[in-house]
Length: 474
Image (cartoon, rainbow, N blue to C red; front, side, top):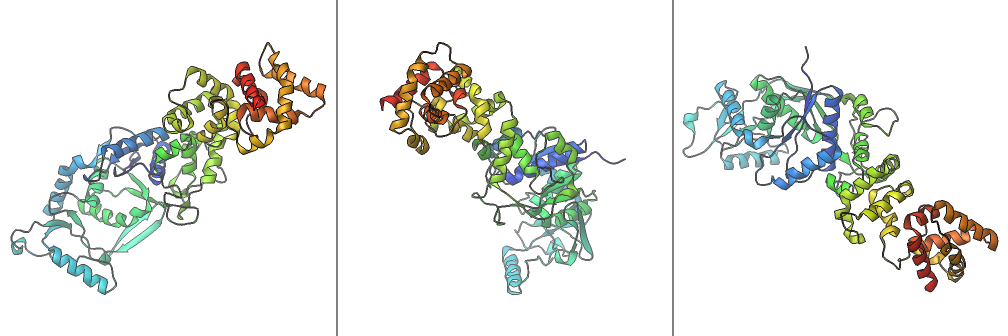
């Protein structure tokens, strides 16, 4: 009977959850859910100088926002150092590891010789079979793996295919440093084994580690997990992903106004395909996802595609849910627009009433908030370039002509305001656009907006009349 699938996401808390890490977490999560298994979370915080609590919180927050829940408690690698050392003691006892007393000077000489010969640095194994009694006095040794020297080490990768390394090209890697602290290579293997991880899904920048870690598994007599190394994400120009391309923390995408479900959908299509389908519900992703469908070439990050996809999700999302998502990022994006969090009940009501029209045009929550500026901008409204051009002297005169009719309206809603404007058009013989465009510009400060009569209903009678009056008075 096969073991239940267990995947893991194992970030280093030296920075925020970046977009590549988020995709790796997503792939692990999807595969575990598809196979009815579990995804575990391990914080690889052995680098105590660079690991921070703020980064750990950012990683947990980013995963939570994306909807990627892990199973069980969070594992912390640094807390398991005694277990890592115990595994090395087992290797020493079975003659699969040894103490190495090579000095820094000797290692430097090896490195310089390798450079002179144009080959990678490779430890020459000088302490592999020497008696520890020959050790120089006062030198604290490292512990190295006694790696096989003949044959090959093979990884049957679910994405990269079968890859073999000649053992003669792999040296005896360090397992414990001279201060007794475990190396990353060792800790990862011991932790994955103890956590019952069956599938290691990670970026292909770890692919060369796969051979080394396979050797450690074999030396310890443990089953090697199935491996799947995902190509990295590149920028649109094919270069390594940088901040200008989108190599940002997940929290930056939240503040740029992307919905988590849209970002999740975009990430799943970076390097994985299911026919021509672009838009996936969460369940559709889970049902369709599999490792062999991941491509071997680097995926290219494209902000335009992400924006278009986010726009699709915004149009499909309930108005109340969009308002909720907007309020989450309001503390970051509101102050520069003169909006404070939390929103007043009146402003929430106005935004909800206008949401159907607003979300049709916006591709991000930030765009949506900007297009709603007519709801919260202080009078007199600033005009954008297009609105200023529309509101010439003739347009202002037309506004003055319609104002008495609007002031006479007792009921103020979409139907009554539209009827009043159309009656004015019929009586005066002007075209609808000749009065509707100036009204839109005066009421919103913009040349484009949601439907005019929707805007009038949301703003209400007193505010509309006051804004029209501002322009006539100019």
